[in-house]
Length: 132
Image (cartoon, rainbow, N blue to C red; front, side, top):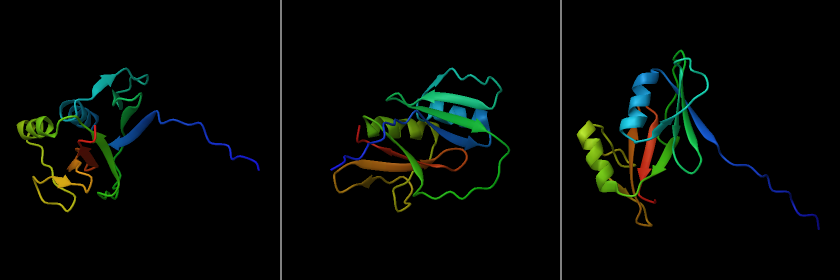
């Protein structure tokens, strides 16, 4: 029997379309504490962040076109300490909710993992969980 060939791929980056580069870069820098890294374009329309595990987040400003945003489509980042993260959200006055949409609440998955959802400046959903 012939064995199937498995693709040898890895994720290198996630690109996110934003309406205001400065506002979005501040959000990812201040709220999520991502480290900004060198980007080759130097055109004022790109910002790159190291998000760990040899993966980058590239935010790219372009003329804004209306998009449909649904919580099911989200980025997810795991953190080591939910209480510290929530304290930072409170300090920055950033709203969050649980999966059903109750403001300021935390969802507890069946496996005990805590998760919250928040939005970036363009309304993209971000899940934060403590499955670190």
